[in-house]
Every structure is written in C-alpha cells, then in structure tokens.
Length: 217
Image (cartoon, rainbow, N blue to C red; front, side, top):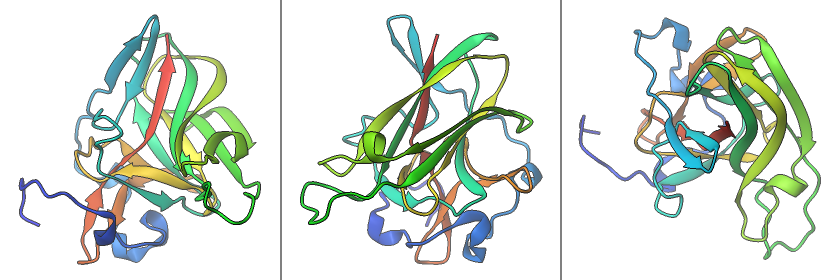
C-alpha cells in the first residue's frame, strides 16, 4: 500500500479473528514503546450543553468505511483515549457502536451475552466499572446500533480511557481509514496498551478507530 495514497479498505481485505496482543501477525509492540506522538485532539460535537467527544474521523456513520471485529478475549479490551475539553469536565454517557450479529432475519432469538465497560485514567487506574448484558444495547433488528450507556457523573481532570470488553462475542465497529492514533488494545493483566490495528490479507496491518464516543458537560 503506497504511503499517503488514499485506498478504500473493504471488509474483504481485513482478516477475521482476534488481533493485537493475541495474534503475532499484528506485530504489535506495546504503545508505550512506540515513538512519541501527540494524541490528536478529540472532535467535539455540541448538543445543547452536552459535548460529545469523538476520537474517530467524525465522518457521517452512513458514509464511514467500517467493519466489525470481535472483541479480544477475557483480560483484554478495545480502548479509546480521550482528552476532556477542560479540567473538571463531567463524563455522563458512553456511546458504543457494536453488534451481537443478530438481526430481524435470524431464525433464533438472541441469547444474552455479557460485556463490560471501564473508565480508566491516563495511568490505567480504574475510575468506573460496568457489567451488562447486550440485549438492550447491541441487539437490534437492523443488526447494529450506536448504544448510549449512562454512567454516574465522573469529573475528568486529564486524559482517560474507555475500555470495551466484548469477550469474543460482541463485535465492535472499527473505522478502517483516517486513524487518529487514539485507539488501542488494553491488556488488563499487564496494565499495558497496544496500538489498535487489524491485520490485512497481505500480512500488513491497518490502524483503526474504534467507534466509542463519550458525552458530558
């Protein structure tokens, strides 16, 4: 793939299966060991007094080049790093685009599947932990939805991570172009982050944006 040449990557070019810390094909070194690079500032979308922070490209979801990838196994998560617009900004909602792969054409009723959401500060200290079942959030007749998950108000004084654990059952949306460099895999056991990438069929990798957003005021 030529550098700086726009290429639309389709789902057929992306290998299936787990990536990141569980797959050598990703050649994924810990992000902390990567050359220093300033994190891109999150896109802000105001809705009244509520500010939505986006670490994807901000492209309209109907036009975004997206695929869905199963979440890493127990002990690892897909994570997005955010910078609050000001110190003391209150986190109130987490928005996640994911699917349990059920839709209106499925012959069987969806089965309950667990997922977990965590909020961690820049040092990976746990600020909030939520365990839920996907049915009211990620089960949809159209197959996918952007779910809003309410959280207790958390005053954010610096950068923080939102971690999504789908336990190998719930597929998280990944934007395949315009990576902002703020999507990672988080290894809970080692308290380490790795670059958020997906393997291509040519044994290369492509950086992605996980479709996780946050809202607050």
